[in-house]
Length: 191
Figure 1: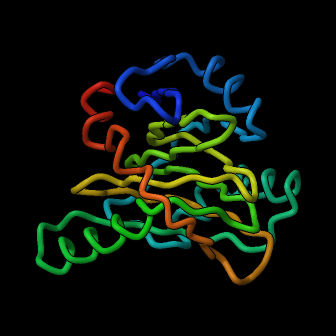
Figure 2 (figure 1 turned 30 degrees about the vertical axis):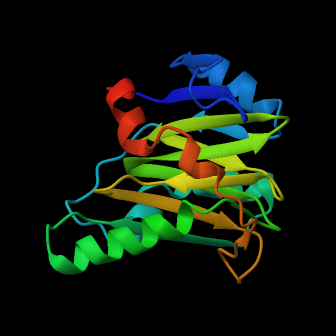
């Protein structure tokens, strides 16, 4: 279940807020300029292709594109097949996204399967959104954040972009992410 945890950015030990209430999550994120919503899940095969996912969610994707002006949509997925290649790919990807960064563009992501945590740092707070299948989150352009997919990631997600360059991170060099609860720690609370 979706979980929002909010801390003071200088005190990772004690959350100021922890909730699963979708309306509260939406309201808190809207104060940051972030959008959050839920989509009804569609039936997908065990290993869906990009076209399978885009086709299943065509109406929802078209609505987001029309409302936000996105021109590029793609699907990223990681499947845990327990192979050495998976473990290496997962560790490399996780380490990259755990580094605090911002983008010149919004970062919109819909989880068609699996989960991940977006940590938005703004206004002296760290807002961790544990997103699960059915969640759509939009991190506004230039919002400092990081993403944790866990030590054994498995997800299928749709990403939205305003230009063809796709995901470009401007890394801050801060190591703040090391201070806050990880995906794996928040997963145990979210369950």
